[in-house]
Image (cartoon, rainbow, N blue to C red; front, side, top):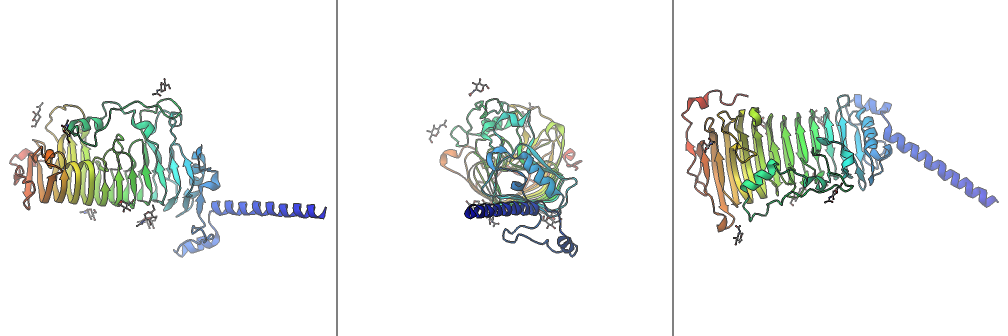
Length: 476
Ligand SMILES: *[C@@H]1O[C@H](CO)[C@@H](O)[C@H](O)[C@H]1NC(C)=O
Ligand SMILES: *[C@@H]1O[C@H](CO)[C@@H](O)[C@H](O)[C@H]1NC(C)=O
Ligand SMILES: *[C@@H]1O[C@H](CO)[C@@H](O)[C@H](O)[C@H]1NC(C)=O
Ligand SMILES: *[C@@H]1O[C@H](CO)[C@@H](O)[C@H](O)[C@H]1NC(C)=O
Ligand SMILES: *[C@@H]1O[C@H](CO)[C@@H](O)[C@H](O)[C@H]1NC(C)=O
Ligand SMILES: *[C@@H]1O[C@H](CO)[C@@H](O)[C@H](O)[C@H]1NC(C)=O
Ligand SMILES: *[C@@H]1O[C@H](CO)[C@@H](O)[C@H](O)[C@H]1NC(C)=O
């Protein structure tokens, strides 16, 4: 009898202890601020840490404390929403996605117009996207969307997996990416894509026509992404739109070379951007720079498979495009469609100015250097006189092996490219059989600062004579 009651007393004690520690954990997770932390804040120093063993501050919001299961099957979207709502209220808080769990998330917005600044999204676990059509309704442009934040960092050793395979093969035939591949890929090339086969999602039913970007930042400043990997996005992997002050480093994108339209990193209307020390493998541009971007520094990137690093297409549907001050430096490209490319549509306006492509090492790259002012997603686009003006485009130390053509510079008749400089260009065909095309230039003006391999004789020295070309040269 005594033994029994003692046992029950002990088990009650254990239960009491469990309940208590559970409450402590929950309180720790949800705690807003303590008087001591606010005291510290006033002094301008770091926040107090009350769980030093874990190395996270008092203001850590673990998604598991908000009901996230992390079993890869349960929908954890609501739990992430709740954890974000709490983290959002605390300056410099941490939203923790712990390692060794797989969180299934539907489309979600981490929206911040009323959030405190400098939130850290610590991603150590894995986040995966649903593969059933139902979760996507009629379609979303973004899967994980961070908007209107000041100071937002995503950091950690975690992964974001877009489960893209169920979307990729639904690509319609008039997809410009496919079209583009057909136009320039020789039949023997490893990058050739197979014809799209409609594939059903895992639960039956087709995925919506709108394919989401995996991770997007919109209208935010001081944004950092580091440590994480994004893989198998339905479409673009990482996008910045309307952001100021972006830093991406020690970051990876990993998707198959034949996954359609899967840009690695996409920049648009954003400035003061550094992307460095990262690896990008995907089915479209490793990095794509669109209109409204300036002061972009891209450094130490491995790119491939993929379509290379691109500026544009700009000026579609007679729009005005402005890109300036972009440096792309110390890049290794392997098995890509292009190396560094600028593409614009006929009929556009605005300008691309002050670009530097430096130390680009290519191997098995179809065309390492491309300017295409006749970009077109059909077999033919009507000729138009207006164009996005290109000037001060500098290439130095572009070396390695190509498989189609070393240099292709096709500029507009009415808006020739000006101040194009080439220094230390050494490009060889991968094998003799690939020596099919000579360097090509059309309406390209500038200077060769050193002899090139192969010799580039098509560049026109000086400036174009046409005065119309000089008028309004790419006002932005
Ligand atoms: C940017 O964010 C980091 C960390 O989130 C913060 O320490 C830094 O002060 C911020 N910088 C600016 C200019 O706001
Ligand atoms: C890069 O990120 C990984 C996590 O993915 C981390 O373990 C490593 O220390 C980071 N390296 C650098 C140089 O920051
Ligand atoms: C593909 O390459 C092989 C040798 O590498 C060659 O014999 C064959 O003719 C090529 N096919 C085409 C279509 O170019
Ligand atoms: C796709 O699903 C539809 C019905 O949802 C079915 O009729 C069709 O056979 C499926 N196709 C494949 C290739 O599984
Ligand atoms: C990129 O790839 C290189 C070579 O494989 C590797 O050393 C480096 O750690 C990778 N970086 C990242 C961020 O994964
Ligand atoms: C050009 O961009 C770089 C960053 O790549 C920046 O440091 C520099 O100040 C910018 N130049 C101008 C004139 O804005
Ligand atoms: C368009 O312009 C290009 C380059 O000047 C020329 O080769 C082509 O024939 C023109 N096409 C039409 C339809 O005028």
